[in-house]
Length: 265
Ligand code: KIV
Ligand code: NA
Image (cartoon, rainbow, N blue to C red):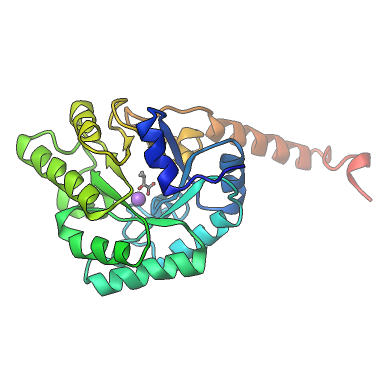
């Protein structure tokens, strides 16, 4: 079947077809998500929280992102794979940003990179794009700046921050980004941005007026259970189901019910 490309995403927006996106960090999960027909797989730096148990996305390294991304790429046959540039790999200078993006493309086989911010990272974005690497932007709540914000609450509720967000979004499109993520901003603002841009706007906690939706797969599967933001819809309750499975396994092992006669050599 046809692979999803950065061009197909623009076409989907033009045709009013919403874009579906989920995170994956490993081969097995990526296989399930890709086979089920997702458009975009994000190897998010949320791996820092979800996979490694860190409180923020800041600690994950470029090498660790490449490990996750290469595992995902080996599984994917259809989806577009977007890989997050981790904190510290692109903020200090545009040349380092390009080197980091090149490492992701060469060493993982991912199809594009995502990085957080607007005007602050203009030169880095331009340099990466100049090398022919597609860039997805990320505005609104940008978790790599959590210590500047102080909280994970909704962003751009005030006019000044909203105006900067709109300007940054327009600039990302002008510089040549193929799409952008808007995280946790008012739905009306997100819709306004989506209407002003030709490139797709993918929302998380940004309402239905955008061009697509993204969720962290472990959240939407209900594997995580202490994270309960309003925007999260859980499609399964795997925390409970997997917990029950483990409890049953423990019970069967203790009772010498497992393995049975057919389950041995
Ligand atoms: O790292 C991540 O999972 C993300 C999404 C929440 C957009 O950046
Ligand atoms: Na991210």
